[in-house]
Length: 196
Image (cartoon, rainbow, N blue to C red; front, side, top):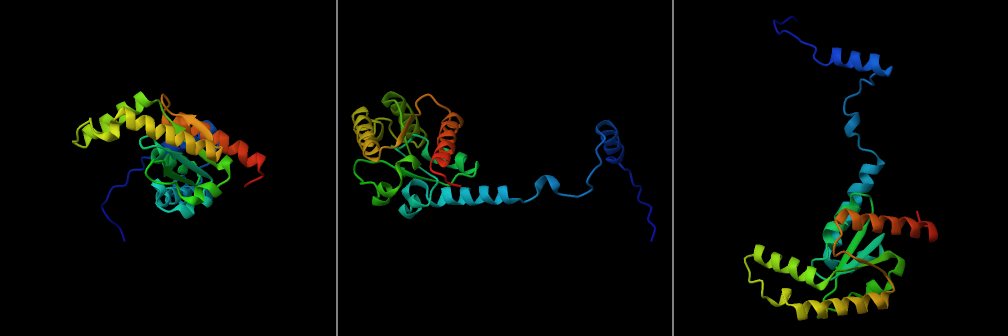
């Protein structure tokens, strides 16, 4: 069957040029760049895990996590969890709120798997005030009150001391920087505790 459609090979000459320059032959296999490998599925599994066990939703996940992140509200627990999940680390996170006792499962997690996040109270006040404004609420709400923030941070420090966990001050750190510290900590502990 013939047609009058003109065919123009736009990639052929470019591929020939690359082949000539590099000495490498094309694989001639579509979709290689987007192949679904083992690493991809581990990443998806870690992201699903982080979503399922975000914000203390299901305490049973704490015992299955590679890392458990704890801290007061607005210390970047969720963004850190998602960032680490994209690095194939299964993360659960738990908010520390004075009015709510932490789940008992948290105290069963080995201390080397727990990361406590702390922040400068003035920085936290600034972040929370801005959050309230974006929600259309008064920035004078209890959530951003300095006394409340000091109480929350004191409570969080007490829990972290009881857990004997690693503590990171996130006051002036980008999420990527904090994640890097956590990933290095996880790597060292996997070696020390002979985990896969």
